[in-house]
Length: 209
View 1 (cartoon, one colour):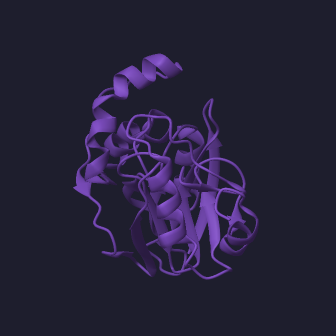
View 2 (spheres, one colour):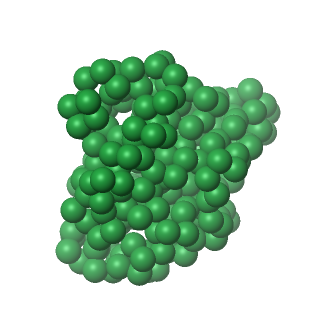
View 3 (spheres, helix red, strand yellow):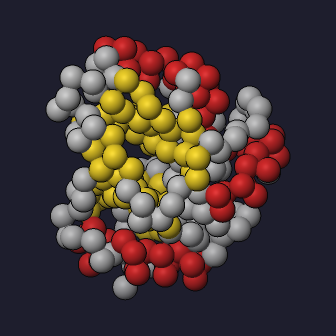
């Protein structure tokens, strides 16, 4: 497995382009496409990636800003949690409030199911339901080595809970009961900011001690 991190937009969202570099098919997917579409298109072309779907950790405007662009250009589906539907209904208001271009409603084509793995070539993706930042926030454990944590877990901090459907109790419980139980050396790749590892967050994250 190989992945690129593309930081984009006014809130510096980390978009991840993940693909199977062990097979000639080079099947891949996007996590939270938030901007820099031309750069991502070039990466897809240069590496000859066969893009299959979009995964959204959650559906705030900064994380789904380019969902429709990539869905339409590559003929792929959007996969996210059903519990994020109320967030999507508020998408236009989010865009207006935060200064994003509103490019139309985002429709989830397939709902994620917790602990039901998604396989793509040699890549295994395990969705983990981690509500708190939003009602349907998901984290993705890929190949048991990489945790794409969205806006749930960051280096030495956690996601905000003052948005629609947020809950401080739920996000703490999600992290402690579902993420901190992972192996120490699992890389945490968040929706914003720099990467970390589970061991660091278990020992030093003041919100979780």
